Image (cartoon, rainbow, N blue to C red; front, side, top):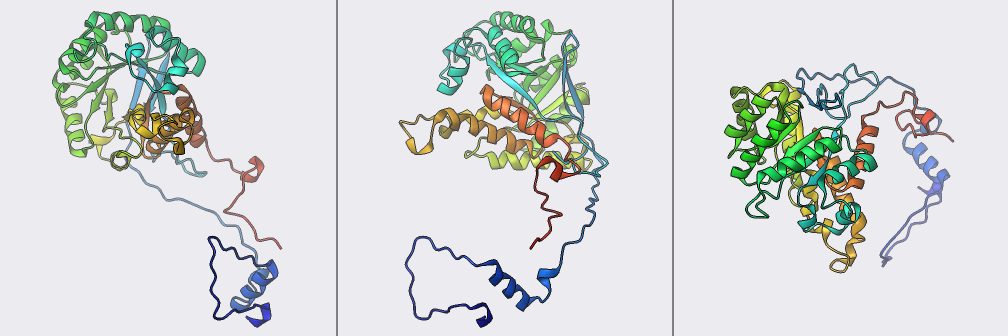
Length: 383
C-alpha cells in the first residue's frame, strides 16, 4: 500500500474509548483501483425491478355500518401489509382501522396521567368522551368498554351500560364496538341487551372466548353483528373457534380474529409471530384463517415503561412522550404483519398510527427524486 502513502505503526498500543479513521477520497480511489482496475470509471446501469408474487388466498372483508349509512371497512387483503410496489398488479383495499377506547367508568379507573390529561373533562361522561374523540381527534370508530358491570368493580346493572350505549350511539355517527368487562355471566347478559338495541346497525360484539362463545356467537347471528373471536396466542385454538362460529351460523363476513395483543417488552414477539403466521396462512389459501385481525394495543399501557413516572425512573425520559410512543410502536409493529383493527387508548398515539399507516399504505411514487427522496436503487457514483 506504499503508493497510497500509508504509515504503518508497529509495537504500538492505543488506549481510547472511541477511535475514528478518516481516509481521503483519493486514498479510497487508489486502493480500489489496485484491487479492481477501472472501478472508478464505471457507472451503474439502470435495470427493471420485478416481483413474482403469488398469494392465492384473500382475507374476508368486514364492514361496520351505522343506520345512518356511515361505515368503516377492514380486511380484503390479497397481499401482505403495505405491499404497494410499482408494477404489482395486486393491492390491498383498506389501511388498518384505529378504534378509540371509551370506558363506562373512566372517572373511577386508575388511569395513566397522560391519558387523564387528554380526557380529563369527559372521563365521567362516556357519550361526551366518544364525541370528543370523534370531533377533536377524527375517530372513525369507537369501542365502548362496559367495565362497571363486573361484580369485581362497581357491579352496575346491565341497564346502565345499555343507557350509556344508547347515548353514545346518539352522540356519534361512527360505528361503535361493544366491549365487555371480562366477567362471563354479566358479559353475556350485557351482549343480549346491547346487541338487541343496535339491531339496525352492523357493529361488533367484543368478544367471544372459550368460556362464552356458545352464547355470544348466536347473539351476533341473531342481530347481524360482527363478532370478535378471542384466543390466547394459539393458532389451533383460533382455527377451532373460527370453525365453531361458522357451524353456529356466523357468516364469514362477520368474523374478526383476536389472537391476543401482548405489549412491547412483555411478550409482543409472541403476538407478532402469531399475527404473521395467521396472515400469511390466510393469503396462501388457508380459509380457516382468512379473516381480519384485531389487537388491543391499549395493552401497551400495562407496561411499566409506559406509565411509570419520571420520579420513579428518570432515566426513561418524559412519561408524556414515552407512554404514547410505547402504544404507537405496539400498533405499528403488529400492523406490519397483518393487524387490521387497532384498539387504542391515547388519542395522540391513535392519531399518529392512523397517519403513519396511511403513509405506508400509499403507493410508492414513480419518480422518487421528484418527491425529494433519495433513490438508493438507481443512485450513481459521481466523482
